[in-house]
Length: 176
Image (cartoon, rainbow, N blue to C red; front, side, top):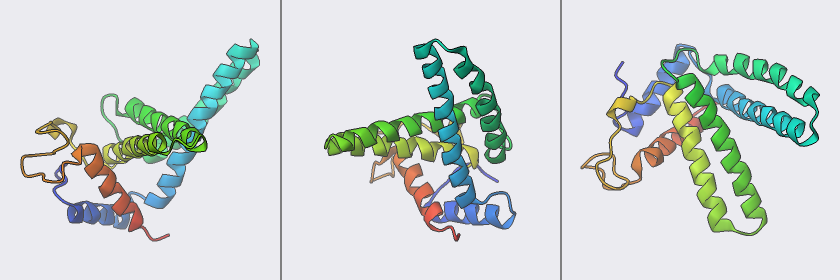
């Protein structure tokens, strides 16, 4: 199966094929990815609490949470090459942090900044799924024009914008 996505219909078809082959349950995997984001966040909080309070028992708790996070991440990332595992973890972590900062900005009534952070968070989250569903070939990604995927791209949303739209459509198509 080729790694390029040419259009939305091809993407939806690939997702449907994966569901039929029981390779994925996107709605459950999406929930699991959010849980993994929170486990990464818990690891960070144990670290900072241990450092701030100078109590090593918080550091000790990181190990158990990390093992749980690794076990759960294996349920989503079954095969990977190079540093895709680590990239995936960092995509989820960055997405979660941007969501949190966006929420804080929203609470301070800085809507424009919040919406920008939310968009960035979703783009990173979409990149996580595109990478782990093997729906993109990173060797084929190149910049043609600001925000354009190729010379025929008139919308110029860029790779991240297009991938986000594809992932959103696939998730919207899931039956729970």
